[in-house]
Image (cartoon, rainbow, N blue to C red; front, top):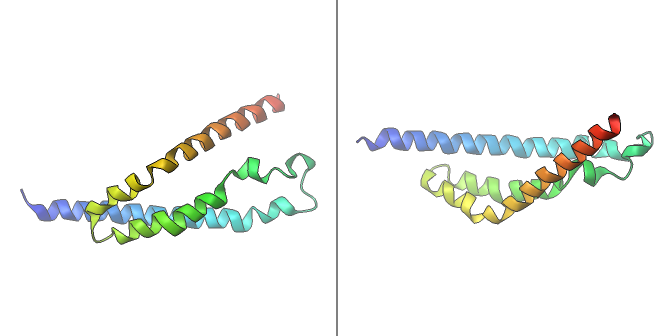
Amino acid sequence: MALRPVCSKLLHIVEEMVTTEREYVRSLRYIIHHYFPEMERADLPQDLRGKRSVIFGNLEKLLDFHSQFFLRELESCWKHPLRAPHCFLRHVRHVPLCLRGQAMLKTYYHYYLMSEI
C-alpha cells in the first residue's frame, strides 16, 4: 500500500478544514462588525430593541473560541494531519453549548412563526 496517496489525501482534508474554519471566523467577524451596530440604531423596530443576545446568541464567544483557539490549533496541524483529530477531541466539551444554541434557535423560530400567524 502506497503511503504517499494516503498522506496526500490527509493533507488535503486538513487543508480544507483550515480553509473552512478561516472562512467561518471571517463570517463571524463580518456579522459582529456589520450587524451588531445595526442593533443600536435609533430607528430599530421596538420589537428588536434589547434583543441582540436573543437574535445572535453567543456569537462573540464563538468568535473568540474559533479565532483564538480552534483555528490556531487546526493551522498547527496543517503539515501534521494526524494531529487534527486531537483538535476536536480537546474541545469536545464545547459541543453541548452548540447544541443548546441550536435548541434555542428552534424555540425562537417556532415562537416567531406562531406570532406571525
